[in-house]
Length: 142
Image (cartoon, rainbow, N blue to C red):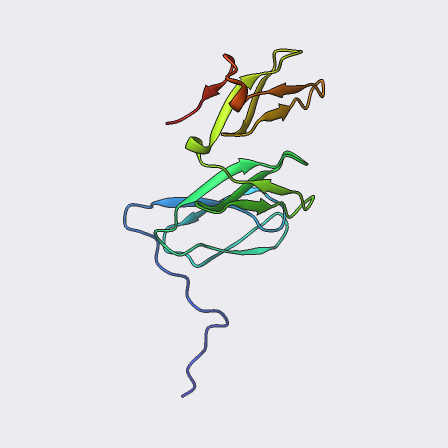
């Protein structure tokens, strides 16, 4: 007697407590929820299949400086290329960035700690920081 075969492997059973995790779709950049233990996630919006990072991989997020898309990456990476606009974004940890107010429009600016100057994206003014001993410089750490 023939035994019927399943066309696809049976998905892993969800965690007993229904725990879920999230990642950004590799196709349309939507946030996807998936059960803990899954190895890949299918996006119902764009039909892309996104691989789930191995368990224990610590993820971080940043907003692309070119197109303002939310990017998700493995913590510890030094740069992240946006799949939408191909901008290479610096991925800085909290203890690697500092803040200063723009010397012209007073907009709060974030820059790599130790830089000598930072250019404001709003008014294009270049504010000197770091070695100048600016009193506006504020180191950011958590």
